[in-house]
Length: 403
Ligand SMILES: Cc1ncc(COP(=O)(O)O)c(C=O)c1O
Image (spheres, rainbow, N blue to C red):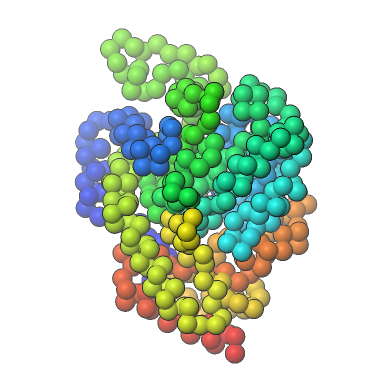
């Protein structure tokens, strides 16, 4: 069976983890700090905080901005539920909007959804393909939109407009107009979950990039406290001679990254540009070369003059089919011993969100994208021979079901 996206665990990763276990320091410490520094250097953002998941990073940033009951947060209807769940955790209202042909959030739909209650927009770089950040940033800086904004907290007053919190869970290494994700807007959150391009088993990072007068290093320091119980000293600082006393300055959270996770991340980041991205790009190109020959195949957009994907997912769409046919095709692909996936079942289709009154009928493009989508396997150890096996399975399954 060809798996969908197993991690790239080689001896280097195993050695890094063992070294950390033997070092005597396994929680947040020097390796996490180094990983944060290297991530900032890689993405070009102003400061990076590593955590135990992207979900934690998204929620922490909403809380940091003071998002609460009555506030609205605009999100694409086509995303993983984590993007919306964190809004619910804050007691705020997720305002779903439709997506475009490239699967990303529709800018015109965002504009229509903005009200005086909007505090944050969370664009999602679906499959690793960056959103239209110039348009999104311009929109929130427009005078009429700024006038609508009603700041309640110090952070909201200082920003003076809607915050853009990019869900960059898929897109570390993605490029928009020559800049990497992480420095394209106010703040971006990466995921290092086991299936992601760059993994730490579980993990995530907040890439801070707020404009002046914000001091991103100060925000980083505050977030370190906020994500570790609200404690004013971390474990490493408390270990220093005689430095045992600490205070709790707020009712904080507990979602720090451990040095064991960071050890994996350091190896992953070091080889990301040289090995990981070229290999993923190669697999994308093999898929595209073959599938372009078939009239039924809608090839995903992943590289243009201004945007390059991180090659996280290859979201193939089959033209002119419905959800039932797509599901039958998937079953036939699995029958040929190839694992595929669907990204995503849109959030408004989930029971919980349906129970809140959301209805997929209001997001026709999202439903159309979803109902025809099949994500193909992409992972470092996938060989060219296996790529051909995937292609054979997909082509046979589609041709069997559309004729
Ligand atoms: C778009 C998107 N956002 C957020 C997340 C949550 O990431 P994590 O599992 O690191 O919390 C995921 C996870 O798959 C995702 O796909």
